[in-house]
Image (cartoon, rainbow, N blue to C red; front, side, top):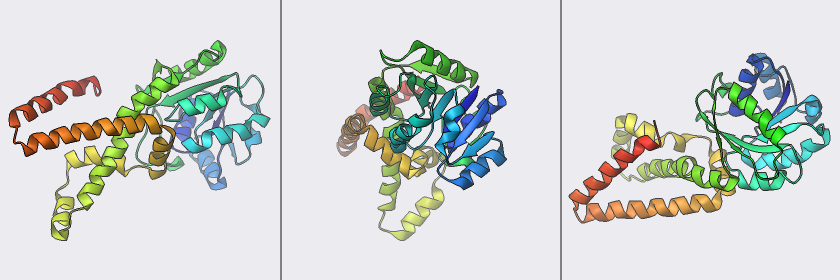
Length: 279
């Protein structure tokens, strides 16, 4: 197939590598000419351009731009697409995107591959990024079955695990396990930086090991992506943050009260629950 990729960053570039290796002809579009040249040189795409008209030949298009650009870029792209072209996106918030694009394009289905790294850009793209990773599709009642089938087949070829849900369900779920951790992780780093004794702060930085590395990783990622998560999944994220604050207050109270028995029960409970999220 001729597959278009709009946005040649980590996800778009990685999709290009894998789909091209499966024999598809990949048409890449980026805002920067330098990114286009790099994507071709790396072998992520067959052709690349800053001009959206390159996508006129595409049978399927993956929109892989930053979250805030998905809808406006799609609106610009419409003029060049064939009526039969299937369009999907990879945004980490779905409700607003599906609501905006579905009335404009019959062959649209929202998607979100749950795969990524803290690095960004075409240089961070890698092969087999989606293998065994969740890939969420969010069809609605008006989504064409034929469009769902096309995207399903492509996602299966990436060896990802497909999940289906409503856009709103997706946004509530990812607010817990993706968007909240970014904010919590960022807050952890900021809290550490509030240490007023420079010697203690320096010592903490030198002593930081795997525990801090694991819990702070996503807070050290792409700041633009973090803002977009908050902006486009605002209500669900606020609900998650409020519940997280409530849990922190509970832990604070238990420690203040020196209630070690209940604290231990809580820690045992979370240890038992963790495998349900991370197998």
